[in-house]
Length: 248
Ligand SMILES: O=C(O)[C@@H]1CCC=N1
Image (cartoon, rainbow, N blue to C red; front, side, top):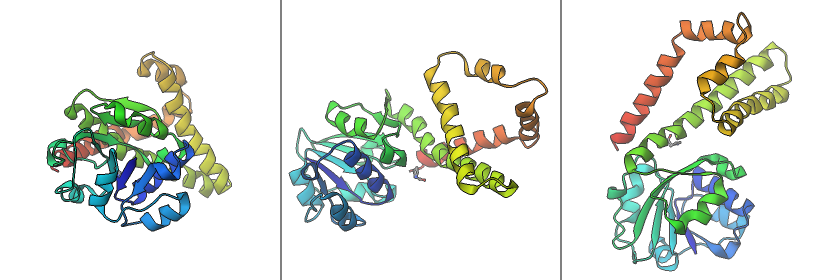
């Protein structure tokens, strides 16, 4: 059975993704706090008495509490060998999670798991968690915890991408486009850029070069973005996220 400790926004998205992928009510046990009661009613999953009860009854335990609470949430529970803890807590090193004989892995799912579209970074890639991860979207295995940490920055980029979509849609709506049309157009435009790049192997710079018509509209916008040093700001934001992750 899969147990989930920490039923907040992320777990709610993951539960929706699991439901969509066909996980049955009897396959998932929820720790009783946060939004657990609401999720139990929505999907029919039972509630554990407490975290010790959950760990005693589950082979796979997903941890989705706030990072600062992660070490305390797993310490002192009745962990056994052949059990796996899957931590979705950004920036919390494996070494900070004391699970005794149970194995540990880290994942960084996105809330798009709700629609089966989360590219979920993981380290190490333990087969016991494969069915769980594949239910959420494409699995991106990393080969070291240092690599995984770099991949974790994408979870912040995901938020910035949503902000760019929101601002582009708001701009278009302010110009007179129907707000729902603007929202859909911009969401699908960002998704389209990602889908094309992910489907090809040619250098991204070459793809962009082919896209940008000399003297055209994309080039005009790039001139303004460059004048505002947007690329430098973006890189500085990524650096700051990395520093924060390392400080946890
Ligand atoms: O902002 C955060 O720290 C978490 C990780 C990625 C999204 N939310």
